[in-house]
Amino acid sequence: MPLNDCRIIELPRINDPRGNLTFIEGENHIPFDIKRVYYLYDVPGGSDRGAHAHKELHQFVIAMSGSFDIVLDDGDRQRRFHLNRSYYGLYICPMMWRTLDNFSSGAVCTVLASRPYEESDYIRDHGEFLSLAKKKK
Image 1 (spheres, one colour):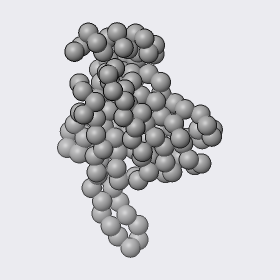
Image 2: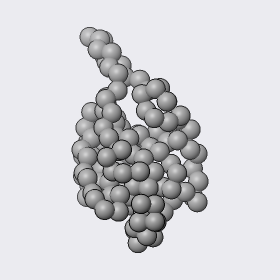
Image 3: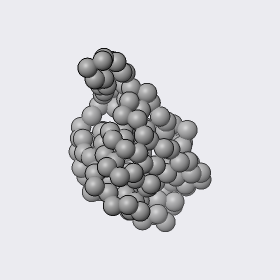
């Protein structure tokens, strides 16, 4: 899938003076059914996360609190996305190398995933990723 398939998606917002509400429905607001949810927090300043790709997994990433950047690489091009609102998320399609960095203090990154954890779906070597990405084109 090309890098252009990865995109920011605005989620529904219900504004209320008592506090706002945002919700996500799999296969409605995001293009997959949600099978797993996890979150990253207490990331030390200057640290990064990710540095891998997935063969089949689709993900939707939200900055629930604070902000961070996600750099996506499809093997040909890179694009940086800045997430800082809980009603926007980044859809990441399979075969995208991703690195998360520039975490603000107190940032919470929530990830919705299309599959349960499967180590066999990970590509952790960037050279291997580049080789597989070229074969898919």
